Amino acid sequence: ISQLAPHRVKAVTDEVKEKYSSSSSQSGLLASVNIRRTFEMSASLDEFTAENLALALMGTAAIDTQASATVADESIVGVKKGGWYDLGNGKLRQISAVTVSVGVTAKTLHTDYEVDLDSARVFIVPTGSIADAATIVVDYTVPGHSGYAIAAGVSNVIEGELLFVGDPAKGTRWRIRVWKVQVAPDGALGFISDDFASIKLKCKAIKDTTNHPTEPFFHADVISGAVS
Image 1: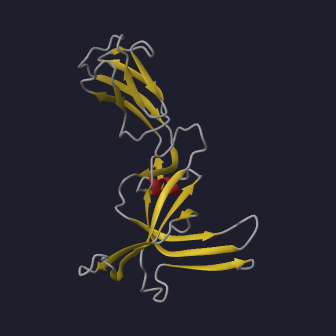
Image 2: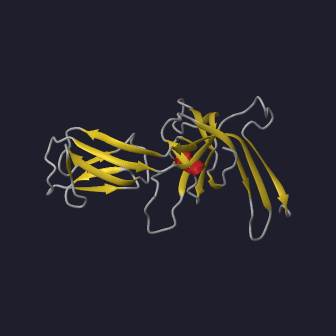
Image 3: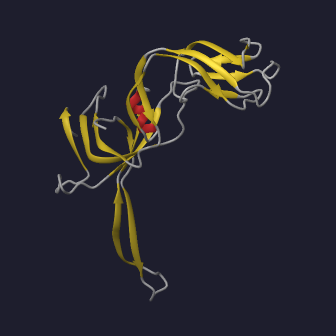
């Protein structure tokens, strides 16, 4: 990832080991040592682009091309009434001119079967004449299509740089650049919602002493405006 606009930055989290006296009733604190420090941020993305969805789904986005074709006599064995069945490889979309038959007998759309043209699926109508365990034969047309697709869940870790550039209505404009972050989804995706949808992500800063030895986590500076 090249840029993410953080929604909020959590306070620094320190894990501290403390040593208390065992020789007095007050058990006074003798020593306190910071053994671990983490920086965490959250991001709220308002655009459901392929790249943003890939982050939320821990996947990769790429152009997917569907070649045009005319398919004849595709067999689906052992169908059941009330069942949906994918055509092709399960990734086809926006097919047309679908016909279904059993043996040499053509079946009737809306009576014996339904078709989801967008997702290339056939539904066996429970009250229709296609019997359980029958083999159906399907003909259809596949249009040429090219667009983004996401291979979801294939990335164990997603890393990148996080850049925040402030744009307040009034006051100082700060820029924060986190050299290296790990990104993970933070909550469910609201594909259907009664509010404006967004993609929630959580980011954890990773120490980068190789490239930034004096400030290994992040750098914050002022772009414009006075600092009080």
